[in-house]
Image (cartoon, rainbow, N blue to C red; front, side, top):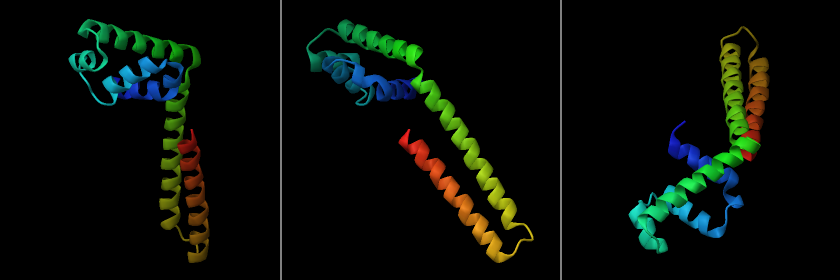
Length: 126
C-alpha cells in the first residue's frame, strides 16, 4: 500500500485520538501536502521540529494500529467485498447466457443486484 494512502487511512481511523495541535499539523502535512518548511512557517517552529512531530505522530498512529488493528480489518473486509462483488457479477454474466426464461433471468438478476447493493452499503458504512 502506498505510504501516503496508509497515512491517510491511519489518520481517518485514529486521528481523533491525537491532540488538536497534532491533528492540525498532521492534516496540513498529509492532506494539504505542506513541506516541513511550510509547516515551520505555519506553526511557528523549526523545520526539524516539524519533521520530528510528523515522525512522532506517524509512530503514534502505527502504535494504535498495532494494538487495535482497525486498518488491517478494514483492508481485509475490503478484499472480501471486492471478491464477493466479482463473484456476483460473474454469476450475473452466467445467468444472462443461460437457457432460463426471460422472467427468471430478470428475477435472479434483480436479486443479485440487491445483494451487490447491500454489500456496497455495508462496506460504505464501515
